[in-house]
Length: 202
Image (cartoon, rainbow, N blue to C red):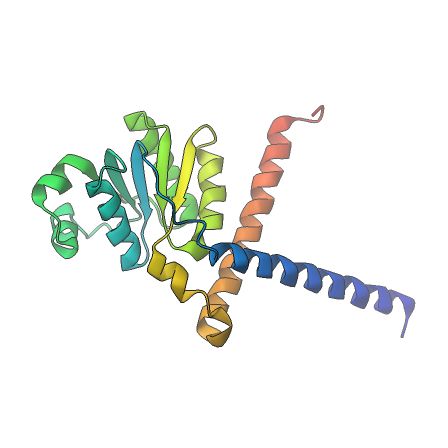
C-alpha cells in the first residue's frame, strides 16, 4: 500500500471514530431527559412536527408557563379555528394567546420566525418546545437569531422515551443520523459566522 493511501485511510478512520463518538454523545444527551424541566417564560414557541409538541405547548400555555404561544411553521391552509378544534382548545384561548407562524419552512425559518415574534412582543425568556432529537439543532439556530434571549428547552416526554431504544429501529437510526449531521452543519455554520463577526483581531 502506498504511503499516501495509508495516510488517507488512517485519516478516514480517525474521522469516522470522531463522528461516531460525537454521535453517541448526541444520542446520550437527547435521551437523558435534560429537556424536561419547564420554567416560567414570557413566551412559548412550538416548532411544528409531532402531535406531542403541540400538546405540550398548549399545556404549558394553559398552566401559565408563558403569556403567549407561537406555533411556528404552520401550513398556510390551516386556520386558527381549525387548529383550535384539532387540539380541543377554546376559541377564547386561541384568540387571546395563540399566534400562528406561516413563514418557516425549516428549522432556520423557525428561528427567524421566532425572533420576529419575540421582538414584536418584547419577550426575553422563551420556552422552546420541540422533540428531543431536534432540540440541539433548534437551539443552535435559535441562538443565532436570538443571541440575547434566554432559551429554555422542553421536549415532550413521549418523544424522548421513544428514542431510548434507537439501535433497535433502522428507521429511527436513520432519522437520528440525518438530524445529527444537520446539527453538525448548523454548529459549523454558527462557528464560522461567529469568527466572521468577531473580526481578525479577536
